[in-house]
Length: 93
Image 1: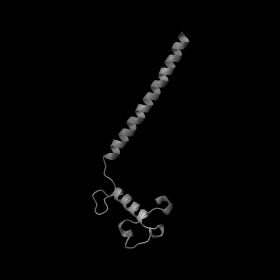
Image 2: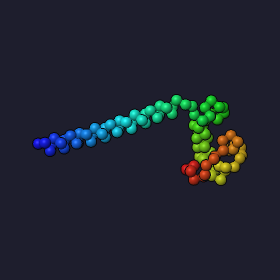
Image 3: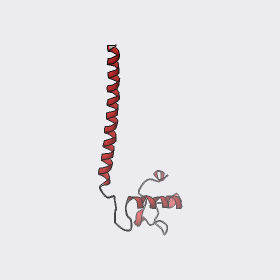
């Protein structure tokens, strides 16, 4: 009977440790997310670009609507001074 009690306590301690580790990990992730969200983002309030989301939207427009050979070429459909692509072609897909 004592060995069974000892085994039961070990199992309970193991469950408690896993539960505590999971809770601590989730709390740390929520805290990190809260800290990061307190600050602005790149280009926030700077017209006409307005930051990272606008860059992603522009790059999607370029890669979807222009052939790959025109992605890095300045022209009427792709103003590189506004927001040219700055990553290798294969990473656009």
